[in-house]
Length: 385
Image 1 (cartoon, rainbow, N blue to C red):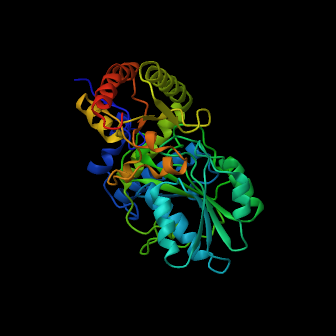
Image 2 (spheres, rainbow, N blue to C red; image 1 turned 90 degrees about the vertical axis):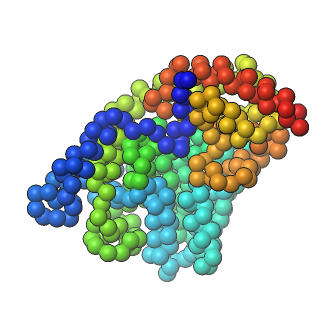
Image 3 (cartoon, one colour; image 1 turned 180 degrees about the horizontal axis):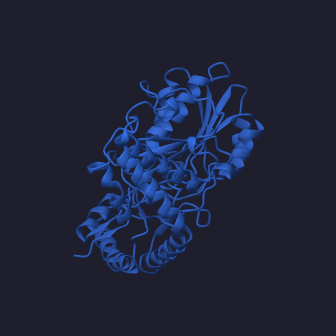
């Protein structure tokens, strides 16, 4: 049976070159990067090479603006919680959106329990915020605006550069979770206007368990982990050198192939959607059809449950999802689609197809061939059809 993987927004397959570059740091160059002898210096060199590669991918000015973390969730937590800690004299108000990743939303809800005031911006039917609403939400005690670069479920792009301009004009720090955008589209941290940017390695064909937080020089941030002086003293603990090395290699390869991969993946996504529209009726595209990631296609199929579609596709060797992997333990309909006002007829039957660098034309043909039969079978037994 042919195996087809179309859930790259959940995680990606590492490049073989990434794994190859990591291996020596497990076997020979296993020293602690804080040690001053040869083993440590070799590890330190690998770490700093990776830092430079991350810097280049996002267009940061200085390598020391890159702080390595365990992934996007830690980066989000660090950015939001620690800015609040350093800004208590100014205020305790955060502005974010109602469709952020759970790493941002649940962090904000946790902070609300300790007296922080959070404004959750609404989104339109395409999942985009209203910039006028953002400006009206700014108060004297606003210390941080956190808006994702691209939504992980729908692929909708947020107007990040405009948000950055508004934040700067009002002297407010700006954080963006760019985990889903970086590696799929060009991203320049200076153009974004962001003071803090969250990045994850396993979304760009790197290893799991490693990520980074861009911290613009001059941004007031207190240590998140306390202990040693690693990562400019902001994130104590012995670094995951093999993972960081793999992250750096993934950044280098992503940067060199970005335009080529974007064009290829975008063409395959178009083929997939056209095939679905041609062969299946009563569907709905979720997200902005133009301002969206080139790899992400969220489609609702009326009258049936998304989980049933996922399981039936899995039986055919095809991996897709109903939305974010971080909400897979919940049986509730997607909060992202709810906030986009997707109706009950369609919200339960939403499927996210997310393509990647290893996706082929044969993969797309396989889905187009098998999906219509699955939808027809499920609709025939659906009590609401």
